[in-house]
Length: 344
Image (cartoon, rainbow, N blue to C red; front, side, top):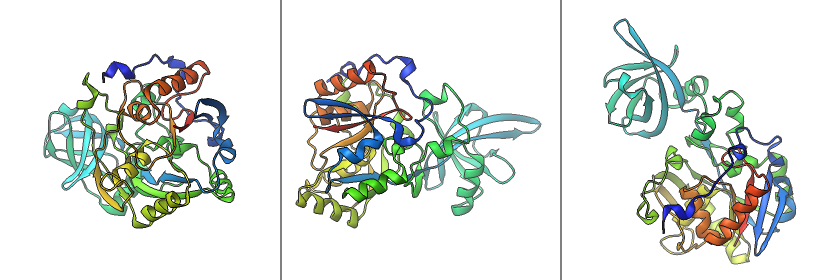
């Protein structure tokens, strides 16, 4: 299984830099059996059935892109920092330029927020911030910018609108440095309309990491090592999924993050169990799905692990057919782009 098997040509004009407005106006490509339907996200009320259960990732994205200064004597250097994940001694972070910061030095991000560099490797820093807990979260909200994916950040800077656009309406638990983007299409009215129809919801938490944007660098994709992300499936969530399965309903994760988490929680027994911890599950063609009956997901990067997951779920030939249709019909791609509903 070669990396080139998951490559395709995408016109740059189809890369979305802003979301559809309203959110539910995004287009939706429904792929079920041998049929493709061109709809909109708002049409999900007519697509889902009573008894279906949508799995929602309720992680909350932190505004982890920070701009600060490091002072060394009279010399002041500007430093851009992107927080990656918390550690026992602080936050692991990328810094640009990394060479401008040495262990023991302080980076200031405004009047209230600063951090000491307590560790440094060839690729990143560990930063110990002066504030903790709720005080840190509040200061980060004021000083930080949303960590837009590289393919958006290369085209425009993040702004205040992204703090709303790059967050789901059901985000509850802070910890992600990237959004579960399929969930960005939902609005409160749509969730209520689906509930009124008899569609059920289960919330799980997977804190999406920056590794979701890391490229696959090996030609044999089966040797790729996934980044780990922290997640939780509560006992209540596991019970709800089991009840829907028993009743004959469909389990449909909204996004690859929710899918990866529930399939992780089912690895041991073939049924979703309560689960908590880091997962580095890598889903590529040949994977046996234990729980998932359908998937709502955006259109993904060429050669990405997310595209490999879609190929595993739908079959490589069907995946190519779906993506060829999306490109030919002008669907918008990636985090702020349009969506698909995939039913094998």
